[in-house]
Image (tube, rainbow, N blue to C red; front, side, top):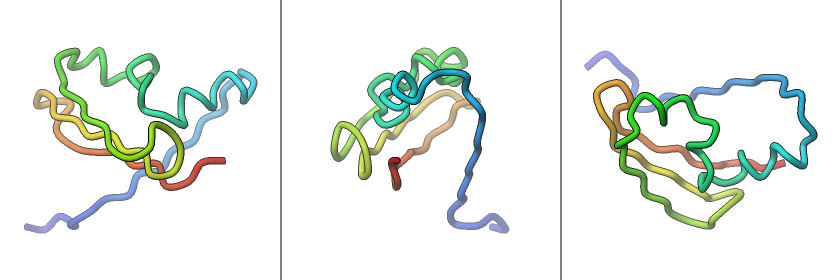
Length: 79
């Protein structure tokens, strides 16, 4: 009742790897569970994908346990 209808979360981190090795992991959700901490929290979560396979417009939705919850991510920019 008192929560906003939507939330925007943005984070950053310095990764000691060349961009050519990191960009493909983040520009697509196909390999999301290789780097996501959520995969270990609920290995039985269900994922669905919409839009292009990579880049702007790629979307991943999930339904998981109480810790992982239900939600979606959308790539809105890709540089």
